[in-house]
Image (cartoon, rainbow, N blue to C red; front, side, top):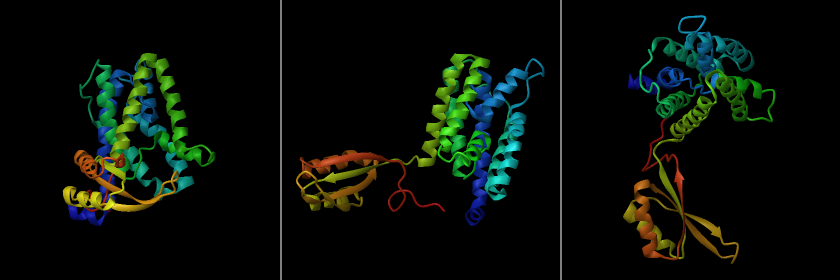
Length: 291
């Protein structure tokens, strides 16, 4: 199975989308829908429709049905404008999400606890969306609508269009479930976004360090020997004095940053050092490339 996935990476993508949509459905059914949290997107509309139709139909219209029906016209528009090749994974993602929303039962995780519903639901949904994006797919919905609209209003970004659409859906949810739950929905959307970004950008955080010192050779040697990390010299010029010097650049593991500071302080207490986060580091000594 592993060799097949390596030979045919598209299998990996479709598996990631399938697993990701399963997690999304758990969050939607067991955290958001049961607590009246409208998290934006077509899934948020589906939660509203289910609540509104409950007096007419026992249990209301299922989430999976609404999600699929809303996306079908988007499929045809997307195929016509962007082509089937572009839409294949989006169709797979949408059908997978609707499937999971239909077959996965409600799990009584956080009934009645809005804070836990927002936290747990946000983390699970964010993880699911992150896996879908890692599979280079989408689940249709407002991101597809935004992509189609952006083709005609190119001066507005897709992210901005999505914010407007999702904002409108949350406002509608506020009329159905009340303003308090709308506030929880905004927090949930924020958590979903942060978790999704974290998965896309990588979870193996490291620290990137810029060092300006008059003892470049000694600092470099200590980093190479004591920390077993590489160092790159970058030619730089101080604009105040006009002095040219070599600025050192290095990336170390987050557990090594204290040791690096100690090394620099021992060699040159007057050194100027900038430490910043490196969200994902690929290459020797860190994470290997995956094709």
